[in-house]
Length: 307
Length: 307
Image (cartoon, rainbow over all chains, first blue to last red):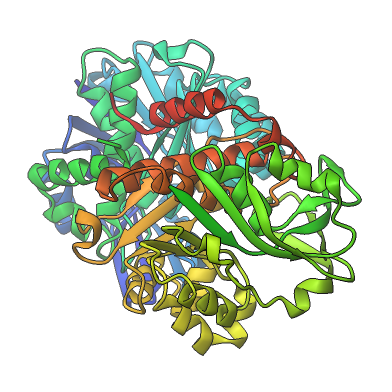
């Protein structure tokens, strides 16, 4: 089944304790679609500038990703420059140039409208809702957001929450959204705002999914997926989007959505995030094989299962 | 099999967002022994002052803990006063009065010397090594330490590491001890300093155990135990010691020590820590039943296991 993602396709300049890059392919929709492409057929809606060339297109095509929804406009692509210190969970933004992304107004091509799975990567929540409305047949919709929208556009985020089945955010975003320092309480408050499932990503500690009572046949208890303790986190950029790609990609590859599928999706999310950070940018995801993914999935099981 | 613990038996005054207490029973050896007593026979070595009365003794006796090794001296018991803000992982110490604990020089009574399991709670590493030397028959020794000893008495901590089978510390202590911000790298550096196993406690994110190559038949991969996401962490004091009690207590209750036992011990550690924080001081541990422990163990499995 096909999975449509709407979000940024961009260029990044990243500095970490392990090195630096001047300008490499990045963006949430890029990491998401590369990651998810190991599980299902991907379609991308994004806007890029004239600096987006055949070379970048090839990265998507090599993974059989449909990029006919990536619109090219006069100007430059979204550019982000950031630096990570020893705390790999927190990026310091050095520069952001919106470029053509500043006037992004995503339109879903007719041929994409039958996609049953949709992921709304981190963009203006008004645009997320607009895309959702253009996809009336989507049976499972995931969404992301960030502190900028939660702080300054709370009402629009609340509307977006009414339009997604699952929200995927990190610890600090969950606390900010719920105005509550307790993650367990924050989770219940956020679920009351709309989504049936809430995935909270804990960086190097894994991720937890919380459910509304009875949703997807889940018990009242959350489910927690680990990450692999990695000695050298070369570049954390895109880890959360790669997690979301593994999570949504696996769900989209399955006939039904139930408790078991959700749990496996959490594991695949963690697996994809753990690969992503092993090299700069999308390098590791580009070289990855399904065999490596399945191998690491087994290690995740070994990391957490009693027998 | 019997488990001997050496550490502090104290009084605490604690303030958290959920309330405050003026002076309640506390101390690492107290939390540890109450927690471990659900799994095996406990013996405690500690020093207390004249303020330690029949009322406090009764807390230990109710759990069938042998306190004949608790020496009473002229003066006051160790007293700690602390406050927790919204970040339950970090206590702000308001007051510390060592009292009779300042001249603690633990001597192991002859009748305790055949104990096969020993836990060296957080005290001066010189005293930890002294106790270890008095217990030549101990077949498995766990130890704890803290930033104070790591920062100011590093060489003594290094000697202690040569004298324990397992070290149990938290994230920041592991990073400080190894001079390395990466937990995975820090773990390998600490294991090279002596212990066969290193348990790193992540607070609300659970705990990970790392092993020296081949130790206890473990694979090269670590094992991670969860915690239960708790809405109201009433009092985090003693959570780490309660974890250690569940971990060591379960190990001491088993005939052999292998990979499976280690993994279950990690789960029991997490279970006991999760109970401890539900009420002030030792209140929850005092009221606990083995049935509740086994029930939560099942929930921990449900939280983490794919099927």
